[in-house]
Length: 145
Image 1: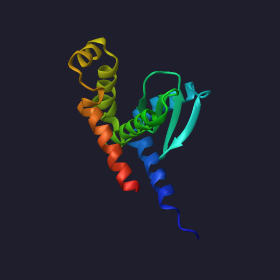
Image 2: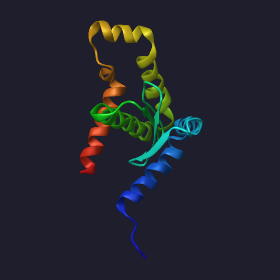
Image 3: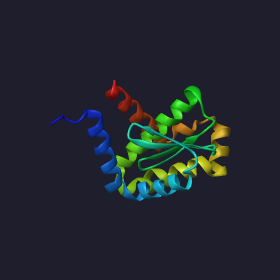
Image 4: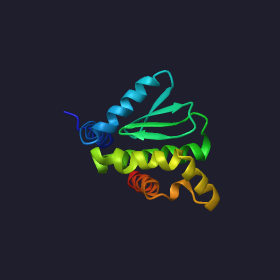
């Protein structure tokens, strides 16, 4: 009997964890994925990624949504960043939406915070939950090499 490929095993463990420990956000992500079934989809390191016609990225469990028009290094950065959020989902499980999802959406979309970032020159990625997503994605990339 052939021994399973290490990456295949990792992807199965990742999926099982997202559908159990990360169930709340993965269910929401699956519903959003189904609603955008006509958009372009691709696999990204075990996650299901969608290129959609919105101007923001979103991560819900094993589902990643990135702007279709984000290309080049900006697109790769955002895809990696959103993948980092999927790793936060694995760590935080059912607490992800409360600890990362809601604060991230508020930090991104509330006019107050947009204006404050613009006035102070603060990066969107300076918030702790955004920095952590970038760090996790970078660590994951190092392990992949």
